Length: 361
View (cartoon, rainbow, N blue to C red):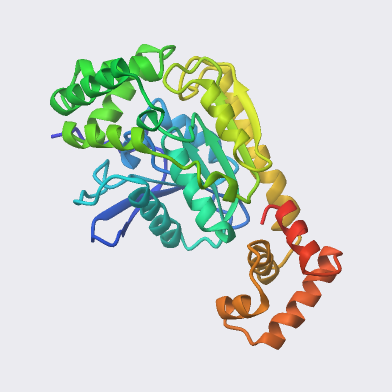
């Protein structure tokens, strides 16, 4: 049995539960600023999460503390990991998207910024493409457009992949496991001994070997290339320039495929920039500045109803569709849109769509 989390060392957060359609529970946490005016950042589930251990981890606690100074943070564990329950659902993009959908709904936030790290980038992209009215900003770190098995790997590459998956299935989950140490050394080669041990512990606590191997296989099957052109929100893509796990070229490809996305390389060899290195500080500053800059120019300038209307207009919905979505009569929609066009300084629907998307809707 795992030792209990030491509450005195833990970050202050509240942990809640929601459920996916199978009935499996999804654990999610809320931390950071409490003011309703602070932007909300939802971290899509990534490799081996554990929301309770995050609060004490030498790796993830500094992330939560730093970003939580200016943002309201929501994190969650994917099914079968951390405090979330398993089910028999295949671990594909549809399952990952469902988890993010139920967490955003449970948070009751009308619009959120999304953070997709590594394999979680695909989940964040899928949500942003499918639910543009709910996403204000998209930040991706160490992500890729499609996984290893979608890149026509060589026979040697496939053999290596199968060897790693087999090792994970049979050698995972024990203290001091060489398999977990291999992954930690690959993901964060410049980690301190304390940080590397924390990554080992994070992986061990998250799930057993069978689930770890299944997640590894699922990540290598991901493919969101067809969804990338559909992303409408402002997007910032960052990637460590010395990343050996996911090469920086894959990050550039990801940014190039998203309309209007901005790309920034971080000076680090770690897949996940670590507290104590300049890349970590730069990532936190860039993310919070990006989210706050857009939030201050949109959310504070318009009423909740105006923001809701702009999100629907940006999707290209007509008056009847907007009325059905909001439960309003056609005449009411026309009147509200007329006032909105005046606020935006545009003369009609076409220019309103362009302006709303420029503002991040």
